[in-house]
Amino acid sequence: MQGLSAPTPEPAEAPAAPPRRGRRWLRWLIALPFLFLLASTLQVAVLRFVDPPFSAFMLIRQFEAWGEGDFGFRLAQDWRGLDEISADVPVALVASEDQKFADHFGFDLAAIEKAHKNNERGRKVRGGSTISQQTAKNLFLWGGRSWARKGLEAWYTLLIETLWPKHRIIEVYANIAEFGDGVYGAQAAARTYFGKDASRLGPGEAARMAAVLPNPKRYSIAKPGPYVQRRAAAIQRQMRNIGGDGYLKQIE
Image 1 (cartoon, one colour):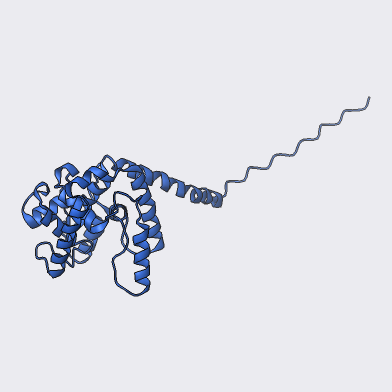
Image 2 (image 1 turned 120 degrees about the horizontal axis):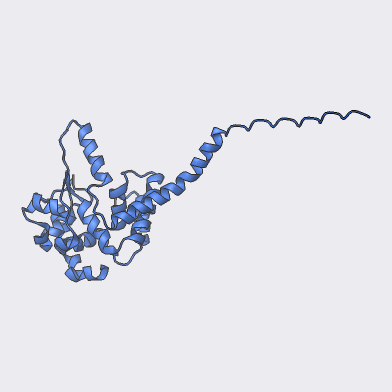
């Protein structure tokens, strides 16, 4: 009887190759944009209901002061809801900064085009940023003209316009806008420059506050020069044109 041959052993499986680090980094690079979209959307959604205690712009200003050797804490802000602020304040801001605020979706395309053409001709003019864009920039971002920052500003503007009603946008802007060196929001400005609460401001005072935007370091509410006086008078006229106190009913 012929002997049975021993079965041929199967070749041992090669050990699994460890995952490559490159693939892990690639997965993270692919995931990061989606994580940012999710985080930023959640961030804006929460601030629809939660009043921000500070803005990115405030922090940058504070760090700049520390860099100049001023180690005090120079942020003056006292949040007030829109129903605790004189209606003249948001109306003055709209009259001064963004007269199409109630109608646009975050961007005033005509104003942007006009500003672009004037800048190409070498004329020094104000940009075409809306209140929504300024809120996005001041609350979440930094200054500068890089494409990256502009892209982020556009994204946050779209989120704000989508997730917040108009009255929330103007409420946040009225509380984070800088009205003087280290003075942020209507209440802090009213107490600092007029010695009263923001609820008691009149149209002339609200117009003077709006007149120093967007350069409150150059122009003064306390000691308005000829430019601020002329601009405040023009803002008051425009406040009447857009409907005065009744304007707020359009954005409720």
